[in-house]
Every structure is written in structure tokens, then in C-alpha cells.
Length: 143
Image 1 (spheres, rainbow, N blue to C red):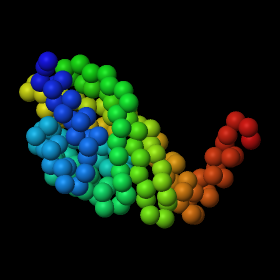
Image 2: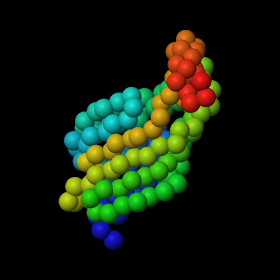
Image 3: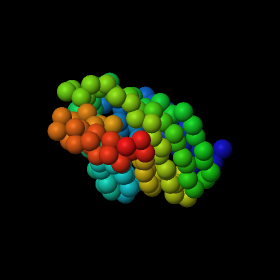
Image 4: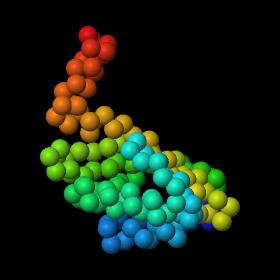
């Protein structure tokens, strides 16, 4: 098994078991200058990535990642996952997303890019949600 495959196995396991007390398990699996991006964040470095994860636990109740598919070689991996959580005032939600990971020669992750639709969260916001629902209704095929 290659270094990248070993890292991927540990990384997937760490994300599926992610909790505030074990976030730092990820540090040995990513490069110090790891690039992390999702629809709300675009940061560089382990400290910044860690801060994004800490913030998630501060704003979400019972966040959980479940990885449903994996496709990988020694340079890149694609993970399909489901994220579930509860946000006070917005309620429970789930996100179906994909992550693209890049590996350095030693197997550590240099880039973690998340792709997921953030509109379900925006649709739950009182004023923004109302406006987005109106726009969505106007541009939908059935309008």
C-alpha cells in the first residue's frame, strides 16, 4: 500500500470520527501549508484549516461526516460524503458533497477542496431564503 493510500485511509477514518477533542489527529496527515477550500472558506496552512474545523463545532450541533464513495490514485483522491448537523435557528440539515484531495510525494495531503451546494442553508435564512425562493421560482423550468 502506498503512502498516499495509507494517509487516505487514516484521513477518512479521522473525518468520520471527527470531534473537537480529536481534530489534531489530522495534523500529521496534512502538509503544514495545506490548502483547504469549501463554499465558505479558502485558507492555507494547518492552523487555518484547524480553525475552520473548530468553528464548525462551535456553530453546529452533532456534525458528522459519512464517506460513501472513494476513488484514488497516488496523486489525488475523490471522496463523496454526507454531512449531517444541526444549526441553532436553522434546524437539522444534510449536505451531499465531494472532496478532492491532493497528495505530496511522501503521502501527506497538500490540498483539500470541498464541492457542495450551499443553497439549502441559504434557503433557510429568513430574508435571504425568501428572496432566493422567489428567484428560484422565476428561473425554474416550470415557471
